Length: 363
Image (cartoon, rainbow, N blue to C red; front, side):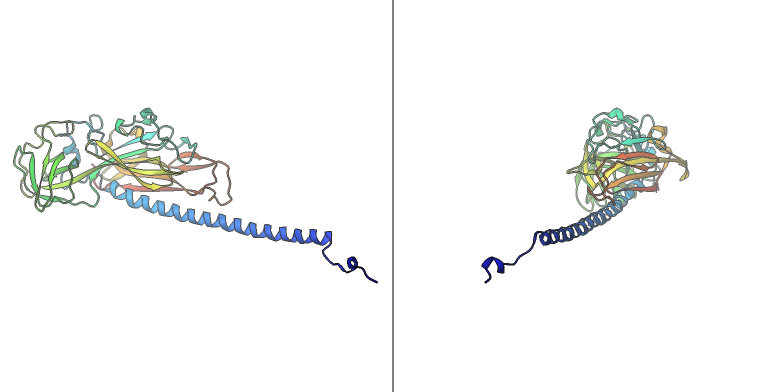
């Protein structure tokens, strides 16, 4: 006769251990596939983001550099020589020389053989002007990350075109233009007739086609000298709206540094974030004549900014944390225009982007 216990069936301890082992193996395999796919996705999205960032840099920076110095049909150097001074260079002029472009080289980043260490992905802005060569313009101090070069240019405002002058009476502070749409108080402009040119700051604008603008004349730090506008520019002269623009890397929101654009107007810089994920910007300047570059040097080696005919820019662009191909957390080094940059141990994918831009209106 069989008892109840004799008829019970179930898994033995060995069977349970085998089943658990198989389950853990399958779970580990699924987890490995998931982690690999996750890393691949992060890497792929970071590569796409880096490519988009580089495209944006080229599209936003190139037109500004290429239009540096454009003012219609006269020379920017001639017009700058009429300014009393004041404000950041180039509008304030660079020393005794009038120039359309000026740069500042971050300490330790003067081209070949130099080295820079970035302690964190979103480096804080540097408060000391002495960490740049030449010493950083006071109006920009505290706005730029440690190790970022600074590029400042003066030229025609993007997406603008010369406007015909209808009348500008001799000695008057008001001129009539064919069209004043888009002009604003505090903006800079230049009037030229191919023989002479004058830069001034707009003090008031009457919108219209035609419309009028008023300008500082003979007084104030950014006004013209007494003889600059005390002439009668004939009908047919051209007015070109100007923009003084600076590019640099600064601390952004979250965990990414940002390529910034600053526009100088009404005595202050309007700083605008352009491209997130840009960790460093390095600049070399092409010295030459007739549009032909003889050599590229760092900002601290430039003695005459009117000799710059091209600009070479390098950027270190970062991806997301953990986007590196192997997920490595060891520090890495990158060469950007001859400067060796050591980056934090955060496992990010990074890429060096370099470009050379010729200045169409170099003096």
